[in-house]
Length: 468
Image 1 (cartoon, rainbow, N blue to C red):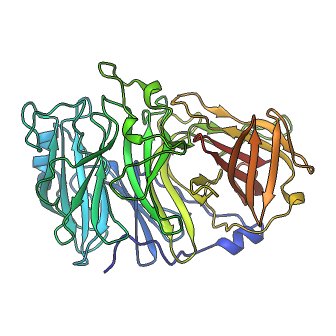
Image 2 (tube, rainbow, N blue to C red; image 1 turned 90 degrees about the horizontal axis):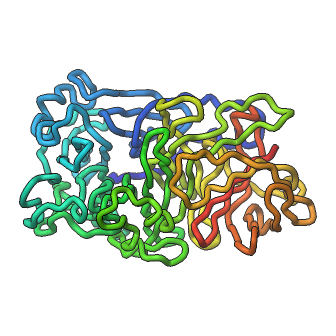
Image 3 (tube, rainbow, N blue to C red; image 1 turned 60 degrees about the vertical axis):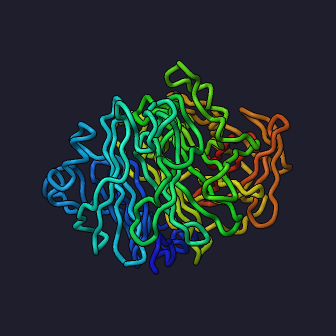
């Protein structure tokens, strides 16, 4: 049975890591990209019925965009999903997810939302081929109604979910689940029928994992790691636009339906807004390991103006693990400094640190593989990013630091650093230990390979460095 699998990576790895060959990036615009691999090709599906594909996670080809008749995924989408669009009082679709079930067919979990309220509907469309055409099988959940909700109780948007942003996944025991939700009453999980893809009966909206009181938390995505035996729940905090402060977080559990905790052991069920206060970001900002927010690697006085050196409001990610290579990847959309609301797909490698938390590489994936490094190769000047824990529209600009040959960190921050094994990184700043990796990767701004580091603390803060 073919499930959401991520094996057989077509790789430019050795070429990129061992030479100065320039990666040939081709960009695509898919908001809220959700990944699936079919044979030797990776596909991402996103909002507004957009999709793209790639064989190497580097060069992307746009397949579709726009909720209009003629879209290759659902050619007669206005009629096919008319009930959904009518319920949601919308002319577009939000973030979908696609998975292959036991019958070999592809199941798209689509959804639409009014936007200024949680008036939403979610359904399933099925295709024989990954690129469509998909045929509607019906709505499975509704939200935002006045009166009784799908769980038989009065719908209250502060405690009940907005039925959007689905991620459907198999757990390690081959049970099928869907995690979903955005703002409103929080993030929920339902168990699904493996044969039909529809929810198992008598679950209502399912089990709440976190959020509520209109906390700005959305875009859940689940990844199981056989390496750590944890389920990692990725989330996006904040608002998706260029001034919204979107940022990517993660929590983990031994079970697909929780309970989930962050790096400090805080229960994620407590990550919620304050009753009667709309979008109370400070109430839930302390929860979850923050992997990435808005940042920019700034040019020094001797460098030309950087290109491709930062992101604005990165978020709504998917993720996957390649069982053949042991590599992890984070796939997300992002905006960019000085480019307004324009957005593109980006892919970065991730690495599990010695505490079992993912640390994200500072630069986009170019085929690199992690290697064995020496302290001499690592020491030197770095552009340093502290992603912090805030939900903020401010762009974290890089500061200059140096990793000295004798293990000190000097410059904008002071502390110490260590190399363990081939590439494990440990940085200590103000008594806080950050664990991760050193990695040589391609920098678009530098137009060459540079040494980098990524490290995460138990307090859920991520640090990045990129060699000058």
